[in-house]
View 1 (cartoon, protein in one colour):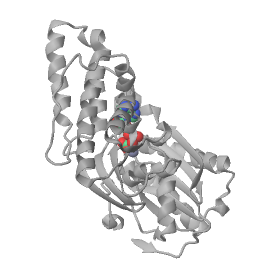
View 2 (cartoon, helix red, strand yellow):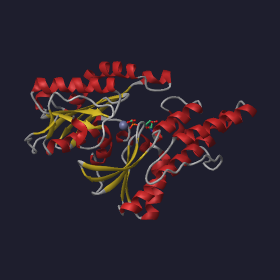
View 3 (cartoon, protein in one colour):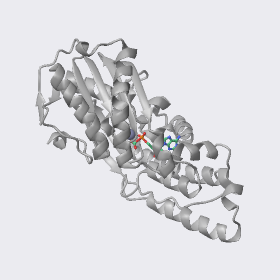
View 4 (cartoon, protein in one colour):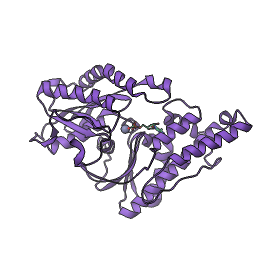
Length: 349
Ligand code: KG4
Ligand code: ZN
């Protein structure tokens, strides 16, 4: 249950933990400045071509103590200097979230300091406030990750509204599933991106599904690629190897055009010209460069996070926690993780 507590705004030293998927991360912030951000990526999933929830939970268990220790050490902060501890409440894998939340709850209890529950997707957006240039409110954020694809109007640090989202797969899922069809290792998104940089995006054409309003759909392109490859492989067993970079470039350019079409529509509907991208897929080189090109045409101000703040990290959780702390939004120890956590005030039940 969320409560409102009087917090000392002049001093906020926060330890934040992220454990929603396959990255175990801990960060320390002091008055909104990130002092350390340690991320351990779990390599174990590579052998399985996707995240195995049980293995993710076990790896978080192994990583969490050394990662938190490193984050404190790098920031030159001791546990007794902490004013609050924060964790990712959701969305994410329940077993993975439980590791971070249980650890942080124990710390909050032991140290008798406030606990702050953070929404992972809101935190991806607030990663824009880690460093300059910071967006001006209101801004539009395309949040693209392995589990979500959302267009969000960000009115304030804690006031965000989803105005469009995917009706089926997330765009990161589309990148990963198509990469898998192309025989690329997991997680496929970055591999597909790398190969696309050598390819011709106009060589193959795949259908770009356009959903009503500001929504997205990415399941159709995955199926189209599957059928296309199956037909081509009947004639030529080496088709993928011989055409890999052109296939990657063509898929990537279709996915990017589907995203940017809706960003353009959202900007024109809302009249907002401050445009940001966030989440793992915002690390994509094609998306980053094409957004810049569109921004010049449209005279938008665009905000593209550093690569280390695109993919999952605890610095973004610390940033979100900082603003919640300033607003006095802390939790009791009765709170629990929610794998399907939504935006808004219904979060902490
Ligand atoms: O935000 P994130 O680290 O984790 C989730 O919250 O899901 O996003 C992970 C997703 C994966 O689907 C991964 O393949 C994708 O982000 N991704 C990329 C790139 N880097 C990460 N997709 C395309 N191009 C990239 N360079
Ligand atoms: Zn994420």
